[in-house]
Amino acid sequence: MSLAIRAEGLGIQFFRNRRRHMRVRDILFKGVSTATVPKGQFWALRNVSFDVAHGEAVGLVGANGQGKSTLLKLIAGVLIPDEGKVSVNGGVAPLIELTGGFVPDLSARENVYLTGGLHGLTRNQIEARFDDVVDFAGVRDFLDTPFRHFSSGMKVRLGFSLITSLDEPIVLVDEVLAVGDRSFKVKCYDRMESMLGDGRTLFLVSHNESDLKRFCTRGLYIKGGELIHDGPIAEVIEHYTSDVDAEQVT
Image 1 (cartoon, rainbow, N blue to C red):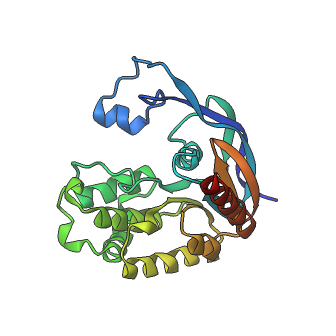
Image 2 (cartoon, rainbow, N blue to C red):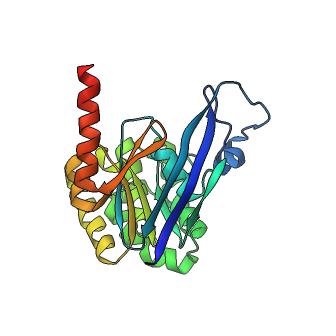
Image 3 (cartoon, helix red, strand yellow):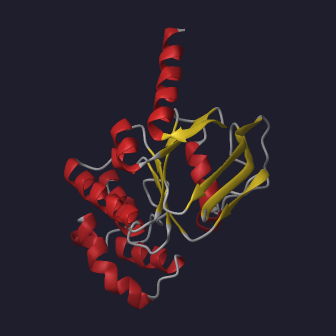
């Protein structure tokens, strides 16, 4: 079995009133200082281990604040673990936040070129797919508008369009399908099915059971920073739903 991702005893510690682990983008663009280390640390993830084969579609299941997005950031290399390690065999295209990692003060056009370049595309390669990216997102009239002025829907459309147009074999998608309108979701579904048909590896975070079952064959249930269940997606969703129902009763 050819592995795309291997996590071994993965763990990362945060502090309650400020993250000790700052993202590189925050330090470079916002001048965030890492000198102050507040008290009250907790483990956002701990002792998480799993393997993902190339071409698998994995759904991350769990309540908000349980570590799903943190796990995606570790896979993407945005965060560095305190314990264990994660090995990734191939490039990663992450859409972990609504902004897609774009720089707010740059225009949409500038962000497309910057992000494409950071993922190894040449200027000619970006130009060759530029029109497709823009038309899929439906933002042609706003190409020279600062990204910070975009609505949430516009941000997610451009982010999804660009990230899924990259050549990276591993795609990480976090909750973006919950933001777009109906017509955009239909295009997203077609794009994701095309990616899976091409043999790309997908990690999908979603609270939409239908989306998880549509795209994913396997699920990882994360609760309290721990991997509770790793198995077929329907089985994992059932486990999560049973836990939620039990908690509501108590």
